[in-house]
Image 1 (cartoon, rainbow, N blue to C red):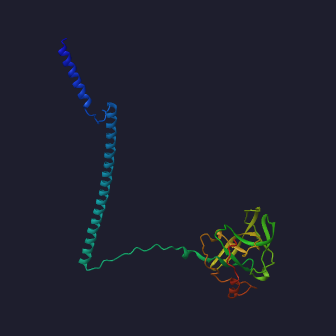
Image 2: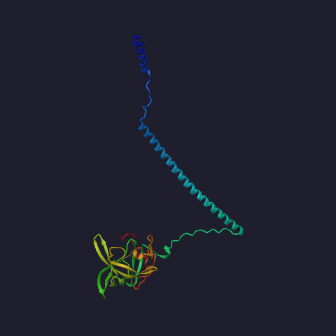
Image 3: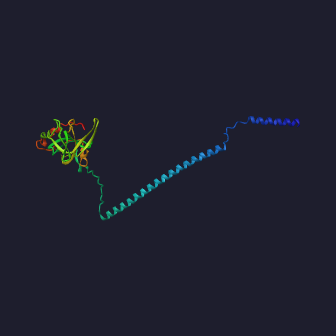
Length: 278
């Protein structure tokens, strides 16, 4: 090859190299691979699909609400049309509209049940005495204070003999305090206490309290450590009485031979202390 040609080729090579060296660097990101491109496209497609679904659900809810509102408006319009027709008919007849007010439902609890205070006088005709009683819906069975409880058998049935267990401050007909009382045992109840278990006899006695005159079941146990010799529980109250815990002695004390007149009970009632002994 001729020397001139060699020099020409060398010059062209240097010129090309100089242009390449002076060309600025490109800031464009490297091209994506096919896998990266497809992954990005799928991600955008999924996001767009979710937005479309959410928008469709919103449209459906709005359409449902619109249909409900439309139905309500139509119903109100229909009622107004009927109301206008009724008013026009009444005006044609020369009659005034009659307004019917809905009556409130009346609770007849107090009209069918006797209202009792938290403390009341009770009469026990078969025992010939009156006693103070605590009315307590927290207790199941009523209770009568008794002492010297003795079980015996009469004509094949279980009976019990006892005396009233009363303190000196307990108000009663004096002649009945130490009197022996006999009654058939209706059943026995098991009482569970911190000190252990015990079985108590249950008897039925006629009892009066204001307008109430009922046979009431009493468990027999010594209540001299408590303020009231009689406790009236849920089995007595059920279906016949309710309690006003803010009041006491709503009914007069019964009268028995040898006892004090009913109008002298106020002093005995005032001696009560407001406690929660049961």
